[in-house]
Length: 527
Image 1 (spheres, helix red, strand yellow):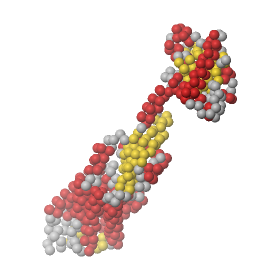
Image 2 (cartoon, one colour):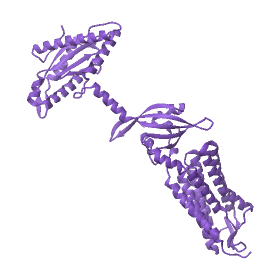
Image 3 (tube, one colour):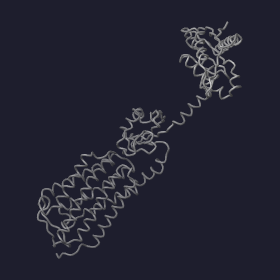
Image 4 (cartoon, one colour):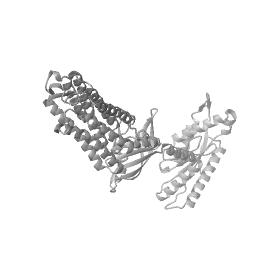
């Protein structure tokens, strides 16, 4: 057969196949957050290099020129084989291919590339390479060395392993995802069939169908991408809808391994953007707070996460709702979780509660809240008898502070006196602002202390040290009236509790009045 030039249509087909692979690679890389997209992009870059190198190989008729492009073909294989296995591994398991295995595959591919590049100096890969003119166009002919067969076996093993992984994914999947896996698994089978056909003689020796088979793989992958949504429809919807959510959205398998998570979820749980989904596990997140949801397969849990903002410790409140992901047979295949950040709501409610219970100026219990807590303590003290005592205190001549120095000074005095009263009494005692410049204290364990002595300590804490404000030293004092709560035994109803509290306040107020009449800055017990 007389040799001629390679058919132009074949060269054009190879160039188009390479260009298509590059386009698909760019498309996949643009969606690099999707598990497997990066590996797919690298695989398609290798496919493009293979097709273009083979196209240029067909345009050469000299041995050195053909060998140079054959070497580029093997460089393409050094890229494609690890990338194909890594792609199949990622979309099947959700994890990266083990680094040592990936590095070993790359190293083997580069070894084959170097062996072909230096084939004129040894016979490990090709022996006696020459240009044959018996084919329709000039092609290389050679004897096969041991490294050629080892490399062929390695390529077939990797290709078959990747295809098997995709088949496993198809068997484990349901609905649209299964169809995606079947389509890509079929695409991955074309290079295997092409290599076996050439090795067994079903394909002519002078024609290498591998580039076109890889183009077919790219076409099937594109179908999965654009028609079935493997890299296009699902990620686009996720980016536009799920990533735009303020709430976190997480998808896990039954073991808690995270399949996908939107930006809000990564932010809420403190997962860095550089980590891939397969490296996260919800079971270990938040000190195991999600373990109950993962065990039950559904439900709701409230999670508190500690974090630092501007060097200060804060607490983030998250509500997690879990919903099972079911297979067509009704089996639980995973969970989808909606994470709602409730920190602002919780803090607002706590702030509103604080505003409802605390005096806005001094931070002490306001009158309403004090009376509520005092009533509760009286009821509890009656069930397990223990004495209670109540103290009313009033700032002496407080009007003069306001008249001489203004209300700002008066506010400063009230805040400082509040601080001193709180520091004087015990944590178990109640301290409140009763109104204006009047304060009230309930001693909840009065058996261990004389009420008058407790009030005397508070009086000294106020009178012995001036209040410093705006460069001034303001001397103030307080008068105190003390009364013990009437003893009750057993369960008392709300009416009786109100009567006891009102009676105790009346007696303490009478004692306070006597302290004022007796010259102020003193403690008076109830009669």
